[in-house]
Amino acid sequence: VASKSNDSDTQHIWESLNGEASFHVGPDPRGDTLGRGTEITLHLKEEADEYLSPHKLEELIRHYSEFVTHPVSLREIKTIQVPKEKEETEEKEEKEPKDEDAEEDDIEVSEEEEEEEPEMEEVTTYEYKQINTDPAIWAREKESITDEEYQEFWSVVSKGDGGGKAEDWTHFNAEGNINFKSILYVPSDVPLALQQGQLESMSPGLRLYVRKVLISDEFDLMPRYLSFIKGVVDSDDLPLNVNRETLQESKIIKIIKKKLVRKAIELIRKISKAEMPEDDEEPEEAEVDADGNVIEVEKPKKIHPYITWYKKFGLSLKMGCIDDSANKDKLQKLLRFKSSKADGEDDYISLQDYVDRMKDWQKEIYVFPGESVKMLKESSFMDAFLDRDVEVIYLTDAIDEYYLGNVREFDGHKFRDITKEGVKFGDEEEDLAKRRAKVYTEKFKPLTKYLKKLYGSDVSRVSISKRLGRAPAIVSSSEWGNSANMDRIMRAQAFAHGVAPGESQIPTGILELNPRHPFVISLLEGMPEDEEAEVDTAVKDAAWILLDMATLSGGFPIRDPKKYAARMTRVLKSNLGVESLALAEEIDPPEEEDEPEEPDFEMPDMDGINMDQFDMADLEDLDM
Image (cartoon, rainbow, N blue to C red; front, top):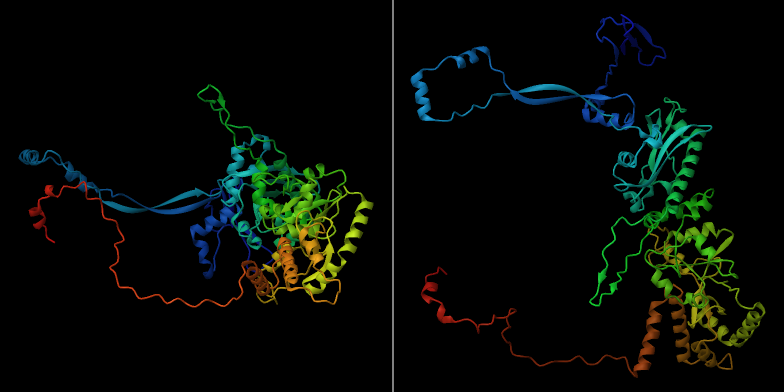
């Protein structure tokens, strides 16, 4: 390292041998070669020649010193083509006067003289190109920064991953035990790795700087559910020469991470609370019909920007409710769901909206997990809730089952899965409900006892339902067991070990019978008075078909498709009056004479063509 101060006449050199803990400073034996400034000379090993590449050097400068205040320039070597300079003797020969006769001849031969192309030669030039041209806007006061400048800086930070523009951002100075400045961005589009569900391959979105020098872009300053947040963190309190592994485990980083998570959640909350943007379009002129009446044109429904954003990033917020127990309550307020009263494409409600609309007698939040809103709306589980005008939240994301298992309540109200047993309604008189249940249980005891014996291990219990409306029966799950939807998700695991394909165990559900339905009443009437007597085959088939219907309605798969097909075959045979399933004799049609195949194309209509107009002699001259 050679250095020359402007106030000193002597140029000094700094030296340190490899492995020494000390260094030496003395006069430079080369003399004053700099004039002023500092020169650092690096000696590279043979295997480190990649650092001689200008592209590699530019990459390192952009990575670590992109926002350094002092300009960092890289000398570029370029080879260009320039006209070759002519020697003086050649120029003199060109300036000598020409013979007049020759000049006249030249004039006679050509009026325009062609300019000779100059002889070119290669010249090597050296230019300095500044690499760190991006401004560190986080160091400025936020009042002096325009939205356009924030969006330009977003393109620098995101590197194109996360949409063309940022959805929103926050710029703040944190003060306390550790001081730092930061800008956090929420993207408008989902990063590619997050679209594919590859959370492990998501690169950290925050860069840690110390006095505008990059320390690392690999610190997990955000939890995995906020991995889409991008931005910068710059602190003057951190040392530049600290080991990165040591810094990762320090209390300072934990304090910074805690503050950043809080600010990120506040930023998302600000987006959710933003007012509906006004229409930028100019009002169109009203259309008038023939009678002079104004035709009212229905305008498309306006969608809140947060709903558009939530459709893309809602899964990450639900993951946060599972992973981050400290911020669970804040995150739950940011969730949005479809429900039985908000099932449109862009209709969503918050949990607080649901609680505010709960019935006076309602103490629990009713939820219904499943594959799609369409299937949930048409399910038999919804009958009792629709009759009572009770709102049910639809849960159609696979992560919702894990969310319910970890969170369990909101604002003191527990979540109640309506596909499980134990659903009760507070609008009924409790004493009347108990007396009614007792009578139904005693009345249908012969049927429930027989069905449990008939079904065996296919059901865990047969009971009289207190909630079914129009369905004859349904299979529900136990209160602490997996729902049918959770079972479907678990059976679809691609990396499940120890389970052969198609051999995953199907849980046994609870068969709930509707005591008011004609099918159930008819089955009860078909029970013989003597418990040991043989039950008619038609009654058995009806009982099994009832279980099949209830199983499918409950969201469970058929346990034995082969037996199910056999039962349905017997039902079709009886209804169609078919005595035997033996196949009819194969037909033996007579042989037919071969006929020429008809052309596949249609001939054009020749009625409007006069063949006399064609000269056949011309056609004969054609070379066919």
